[in-house]
Length: 172
Ligand SMILES: [Zn+2]
Ligand SMILES: [Zn+2]
Image 1 (cartoon, rainbow, N blue to C red):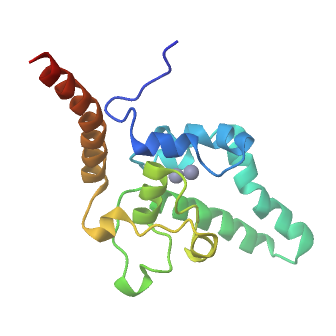
Image 2 (image 1 turned 30 degrees about the horizontal axis):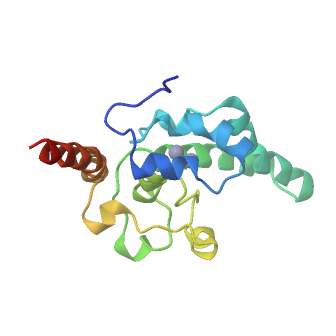
């Protein structure tokens, strides 16, 4: 039985981490489709399993039943979260340097797509820092996502290539 393999990213650390994620299994199942996009795009920002999309929107729907919230403010929040969600998927990593440590921007979320169990945050990095899932974005370390994927591919090829070359040496 051969599972679906994405070109060039198979057998990488990222995928092993993906399977070993700390998220409970049902959440993993419903959230996994969103991670079909290793490199996200504005379109990926709204590509969720319907159950995942519902669960992510649930706090916004519960809040007005618990606390006073004007209907215009509610609509404003709805528009804002949509714009924000697109912005963290658009691959534009520019953010003022003094905000890079606290705001969960596109660079943080790109690493979330690449490595799955880091940078879960929507707006801020606070809870990732408290929970130990914060990762300094690759892009802020001078390594873009494409460089990171190349590195992971090389690691994967190194393992299999090393074994093959070892066998070749034995045959020599
Ligand atoms: Zn995403
Ligand atoms: Zn995710």
